[in-house]
Amino acid sequence: MTTEAQDVTHTILTALQAGRHFKVEAGAGAGKTSSLIEALQSILADRPRYLPRPHQRIACVTYTNVARDEIISRTDRSPYVFAETIHGFLWPLLSPFRKHLLRHIVELDIMLSKMEGHASLDGYTVEYSTGFQKVDHDSRRVQLGHNDLPVLARAFLALPKFRALAADRFPIVFVDEYQDTPAGLAEAMLGTPGDEATARGPLCGFFGDHWQQIYDNACGALEDARPTPVFRRRNRRSQRAVVNLLNTMRPELTQTTASGVGEGTVAVYHTNEWAGTRLTHHRKGQLGWDAAHAARKWVLDDVRDRFWSTGASGHDAQARAEEPSTKILMLTHETIAGELGYQKLHGAFRRNDSYVRKEDHAMAFFMDTLEPALLHYRNKRYGAMFDALDPRGRPPINSSADKQEWMAS
Image: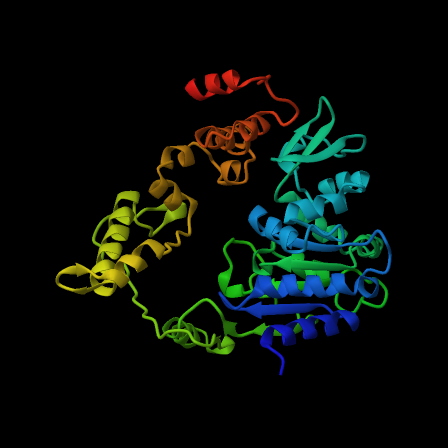
């Protein structure tokens, strides 16, 4: 008897062998990423069938560096897996066609406000590095912004030759958390309906859950009928009470619990009756920072009294064991910044990506170089500290006295 995970992998491989796209839909905790990894491992185990040419790779598109690194690690850094963020995937596909990019920029009015009366960008160079739009007419240089790549990719994916070239490099493309794909891009990856015989592009596999969409102007539910639907229903993360609540909220994608799980408890806290002044503009209806912090503290205090304490005398042994293992999920960068004490830093940037994705050079240096070096210094791992500061060379430490001097400084 096969497991659900094995059945899902079999359905994915059957779809690929038949030349069909597929879509794995699974709620939180049901194993979307596991299905992606298991499918990758199966493909790598039978690589000549799926990647018949030596230079071909499977592309895995993610939305965070953490997810990308997990895929790379769990596929043993296979040279046949190209795991990257959406922009890291699109730019290598688009960059060889720079003349066409410049023409599409003009035709699609992507940088209309920066053209300054110019009707053409012929002879300009085009790059994607900082993620911010810029046109320097004096040096004849164009810098693409983050939002430009999906727009250009949608236009290019409508071209049969481009789709064929993309498929030659990446016969299979997996998209993790497809629901946050920029609007229209997932559909463009599938090609124009009915054109499969004349404009074969990569076979696409989408993994996600449209209920978990985070970003505005994103794919959400992929309604296209061409991908083979695949479902994972076994919730491996939650106890029975949580799964029952999810099934009440979402009966069209019912989940089952893993064997041996406990009953669990669900408690819902809300601030609907809060009488203070709520925020406006892009944060319309949200609580201010002080009120949100106070509400969080109240919830934790109530949880301690209601669920962790079994008697008037206070916490018992089980409660003391449960409290440190409690996980708190904060969904916005602003909330995280406030709770962890860097709210002013958060407010210094107009865009979250400037520091979350280390687009700002100072933040990249702080997070990738200075902070690791300080942590190594605190742990007296001086070799690792010097590697973090400058992996190309270290200052001379030739004796124990040199080490003692560093320890004392």
